[in-house]
Each structure stands twice: as structure tokens, then as C-alpha cells.
Length: 154
Ligand code: FES
Image 1 (tube, rainbow, N blue to C red):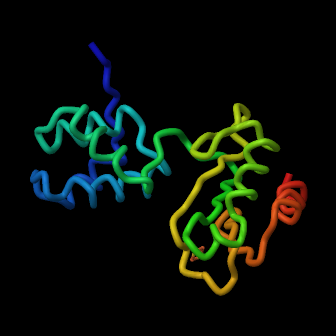
Image 2: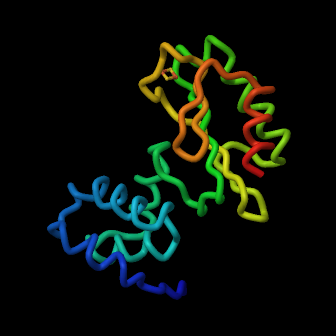
């Protein structure tokens, strides 16, 4: 049996919503805003609140790429994989970042310094390919420029 540790900071998040399944996605979005990811305990807490199984909640959450299940690193690198960025080589950027950081997209380095994430169109297609490092948008990027940014923030 899994031991669940309720996160008191989530009580306020959950209290904003009626206990109805239709609020599952907004609740998960709020929980992720609060914790920066969806921990196993948080998933159980949400499931308990809505009267669902943790498997149901996890199944829904994993369907959407917006949800993270591991804590992000101190530096969060997002590489846009929308169409405009993709055709201008964002796939090569994410491959190179994965090689440099020794993690796959969606993972965080063991020292919790960096996390790498693929994101859908960031709304800055004119600047494609776009890389977002710690919420700062960098346009017309390539793997070399992205590596240089990572070296600068290290
Ligand atoms: S496709 Fe990358 S910003 Fe739109």
C-alpha cells in the first residue's frame, strides 16, 4: 500500500474547486503551478479529493504534455517543437541538449541543475527556432548558441 503525504499547500488549491471530475485538468494545472510538477503524493491527493483512483488521475495527466512528473531543475530549458520551429531545426537543438546534459527531454539532471523539455508552439514563430531558458525567450537559435547560453548560466 502506498503511503501518501498530503501537501498542506495543496489544500488551498483544492478548496477552490468543487469535487467534480470536470475540474480535474484545471486542478492539475494549479497543482503544477504550486509544486512545479505533479508528485505522486499530489496525484493521490487530487484523486482522493475528487473521489477518483490515482490511476485515473495519472492516466489523464500523462495524456497531456503540459504536465511534468519530476521536479524541474534549477535551470529549465524548453525547446519549441511547434511546426515553424521544427522546420527550422529545433529537433537538432533538443538532440544536442540531450547529449550535452546526458538527459532525455522530460528529464532533470541528477544534480537537479537542468531540466529539458519539449514544448508546443510558444507563440513566437517569427523567431523560430525558439528556446526558452528560465522563462527568457531566445529566438533564431541553434545548438551552438543554446550550448553557449547553458555555459553562461552554469
Ligand atoms: S512553432 Fe515555435 S514558437 Fe511557434
